Length: 83
Image (cartoon, rainbow, N blue to C red; front, side, top):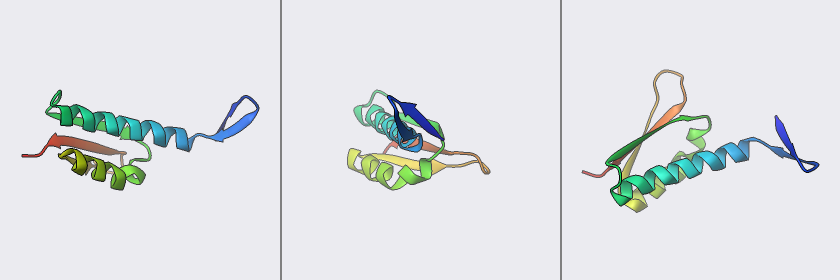
């Protein structure tokens, strides 16, 4: 499916990937800053594609990121301060 903006067709997937990446970065920032002890992000449609970069970002920030999945549902990301 594509979205038409100003006579130009754009695929939806990059927008969803960008939104998911921004959510992950925000979750990491919340835990890194100490505002939150942990954050669980759910509902990612393309979460597996972002895992390598998300794990690298979390490691660089000094927090732990663990993917979780229940059954065949979408991946959830559990972000916590390192013990």
